[in-house]
Image (cartoon, rainbow, N blue to C red; front, top):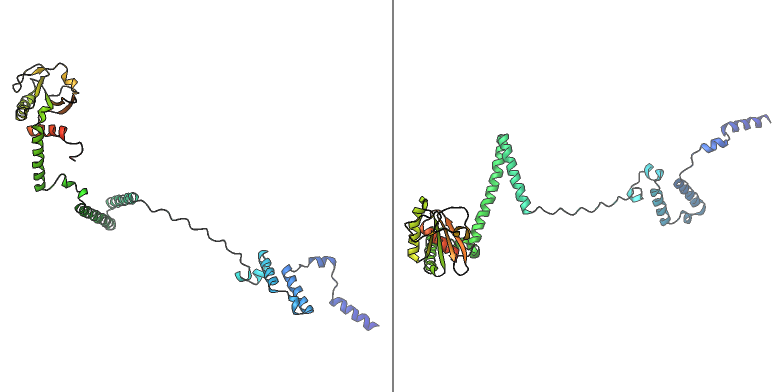
Length: 302
């Protein structure tokens, strides 16, 4: 009897009874662990079929990953293949490439860079800054040379674009063009008196008028051009003895001020005046202006 009592005391000390408070302090196992243990127990009790299908296990794995199971993922350090790493969001589509700068913008940028390098070389004249400026400037000069050369070659191969065919610049071409032009002028001026007349405004006190009067007289005699001399101050002129005193003709012709000598070409068909010019002019200049005003289309000579 005493031996039995001693054995009971030993067993009570070795296996303490859990109190309700002590039971509550125990941390429950994660669901995944519990389910895994349950599955293991079922497997031991019920055989191979109780382990479940592969699809069921895969679903459980994905659920555990999605719920952030610490034991399943972090403790065991499983990766993407075990559904622990959440799938990364697909990168946003790359923005469409910005349109290339226009040629005008590129040229403006080159000019700006050239000015910047020049300013830097002037303000900080170090060998490096000056070398950079010279190299960049040389690059632009080469580009300009290529442009000028290609321009010239293009003109040679496209006569419609070659302005020198209308107004030659070489000596032989200019001489030929001038001879043709003078022939056309002589032909037009020989017929000018049939339609046009000239008003010559002068003043007897004007020294320039004394010089220009004989010049205008020679043009009149050469082409039979009718010239009406009008005196603004009422005085005579030796070149045109049959003069007329101004009674408002100067303003009626659209002239302004009192500048003399002055020439006005008058169209007897349209009754429209065309000022030729003011001041002293050579005979050749007078003839060129009359020919241009009457026979050359505006813009065709340039």
